[in-house]
Amino acid sequence: MFEPGHLHISRTALQASDFSYNIHIRYEVCENPVEGKSMHFVMEGDVGGNTFQEEFELPRDMAFNFAHDANRIALKHGLPPAVTLPLAMHKDYDLMFEDVRHKLHAESGDPVKPEHLT
Image 1 (cartoon, helix red, strand yellow):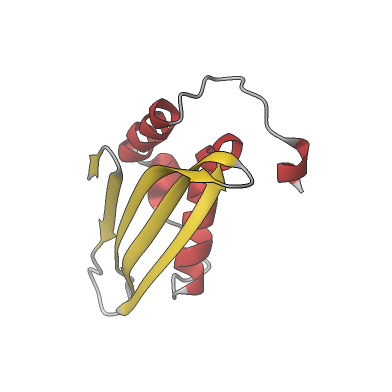
Image 2 (spheres, rainbow, N blue to C red):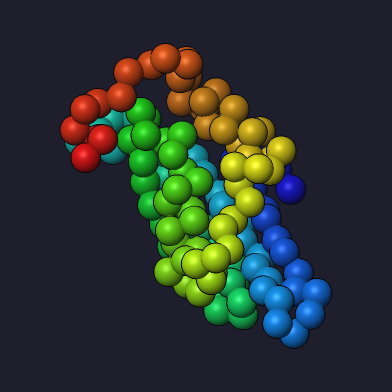
């Protein structure tokens, strides 16, 4: 479920051998003293019954790569490696992507700093 500034994704285990998660990703624009305008993310919930909360920040030119960071955090907190968060295949992901773009006043084709690609 998506609303501007918040994405909630969940999956319920249907069998004992299945896997579940319930994750909220909240985000807002922030001003980083080094990078300038950035996006601050708070990711919290549970993965397979393991509760967690983590925060991360991405500079303006990398903020659209949030799904990578969200999946890395979910894996760290117990998401099986064979399972990935459905962000890239989820209609709410598209809405979040557009909301991040809108909040950062970004346009398709804006340059990425080469030092952010390492």
